[in-house]
Image (cartoon, rainbow, N blue to C red):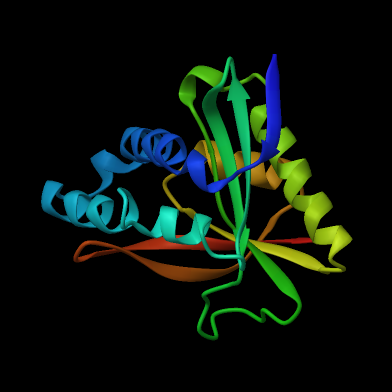
Length: 171
């Protein structure tokens, strides 16, 4: 059985560890090791972006737990685009990560439903997200759930620049 709840500050280390592991499993092959190391050093750990956002009231997190262990999470917050697409009134789905051991268990759709519900309760007309063009599994998941490609974003991993697709779901 999977339990879902809003994340709290004390979840930081567990979310961080799971996110780092999933990120490396998904993206470590996509850039030179020095670029991967630079990205991971900035994103994860006690001073990383993930934990800073967990402490920031502008961001909302939902966690999925199996037997008390984080197997997925979703993070919503303000957009960071700089003119690539219109953002007025939107919310940004920054991350929806699921441990590969929990793939197919319904965690990702449940977390996405939480994100859509939160956006609707806030009167937000649309959700934006970015997904790496090489992440076929994630792209297919978002398309299946109604997201459409509306633009491109230059995502930096260390010194490497990758093409991320900006996707939008009108609510």
